[in-house]
Structures are given as C-alpha cells and as structure tokens.
Length: 294
Image (cartoon, rainbow, N blue to C red):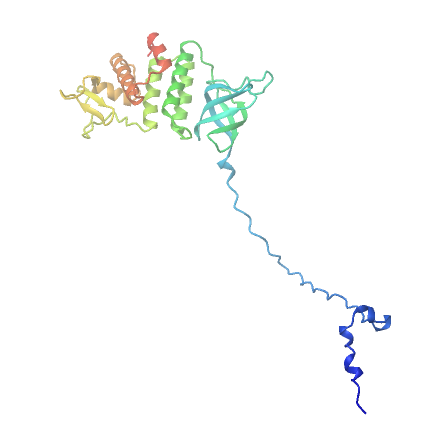
C-alpha cells in the first residue's frame, strides 16, 4: 500500500500561520515592553561651564565727571553732545528726547557746568542714560564766556575720541574757574594752551634746546614745531618767531606777568597752534583776536 503524504509535514508551523488561524486560547500572551532602568542620581550633577561674561565697564559707564563741549540737534527731539570726561576723554553721546519741553535733560546739558554722566553702548556714538548737575562752579559771562568757547574748540580739535587725559581734564576745570574769577584772560589761555600741547603729544620742552643745551635767559631762540627750541641762525625759516630765553623760562614756570613774556608767548602759541592745525582757522580765536583778547 502506497504511503500517502505525511500530513504532519504539510501543516505549517504555528508561528507561520496568520493570526486569524489562532483560537483565542492559542494566542500567545502579549509581552510587556522591557522597562528602562534609570541611572541612579549622582551626588554631583554635571554643570555646563558658564560662558565668559564681558565686563560691564566695556559698555556701561556710570557717574563719570564731565563737561559738554558742544551739542547739535539730532532728529526731532534729541541731541548729539560732545563731552569731555576725566577717564574716557572725548565721547559722543546721543541724548534721546533732550529737546522735549519736559525732558529732565533739557536744563542740565549746558556748557561749562560740571556734570555726572552715565552712558551705555559700544559704537562710535553712545547713548546717554543720565546726566546730573554737580555744581560748585561759577558760570562764565562776557569775555570769559567767549574764552571758554575758545578752550572748548581747542579740545575738540586736538583731543582724539576716547583718549583719556586726566591731567588735561583737571587743568580744564582750573581754567574755567580762573576765567570765572576774572583772572587775566591772556595769561589763563596761554597756560591752558601749553598744557594742551604737552598732554596731546606735542613736544613742549621749553628749558632745553634740541642739542640738549639749557636755555639761557639773555639768548635768542626760535621754536621748531617738529623738534623744539633752537638757537637763532640765518638758515631758519623767517616765519618762525624769535623769542627770548627769558620768555621760554617764564612760560615753563607758567608766569606771564612780564609784558615781554605775555607778548612773545602770544605770538609763539599762535604760530604753534596754526602749524599743528594745518592752517585751519579757529572760529572763536578769530573773534578773540578781533577783540584784542588773544
């Protein structure tokens, strides 16, 4: 008898049958998803390192002593002010809303008045945040006021932005005080001009010549704008003013009581300032010259 096919071999294994072929009792029990084991907390959780913070002083200045040198309108309600501060030199600030009738800044941002200034920002023009009147100085009036504008114009011309000159700042305060107390304007201005040239990098050694020889009171000299004091000789430019050794000694001592020193000092400083400014005239100086004050 021929053996028929083995029926057991023709039946597919249970795992290969469709789910519909299972009876309810034959379905395998569903397996629960394996639980993830949570790591035990450590006593010191890792902390990401904090990003380095830029010092606040790089972009925020608070209560800096300063003066307004010049201001001009900016848009409809604001001002751009050029200030001279003790620790930051000349800085341009925008005073937002300063032209509005009820602005707290409107009556504060005046020239020749000591202020406590705060500002923020990193661009060429910073933003003024507060300005407080410090007081303690007499206001300038008459010829003294015009001399004050002349001094301010010199600072704008000779001082680079954000180049601090603490000694020059202190002498500026002294100059305003001397003008307010009606000291002789010519003497006050000569003193300021000498300090200005020294502090802004122009050689103003009046006691020695370019050959390192001491200045002699009864000798005659010229001042080379690029080198310094030189003895008079025939090969020097004729436009260089001739000055006595006594004048140079008096100027170094900040003493302008001698009439010859006052006259020669005025001529010398007029020549040097004109040279260093490249011939650019100063508006306020021309007015003072016309008034015979400079």
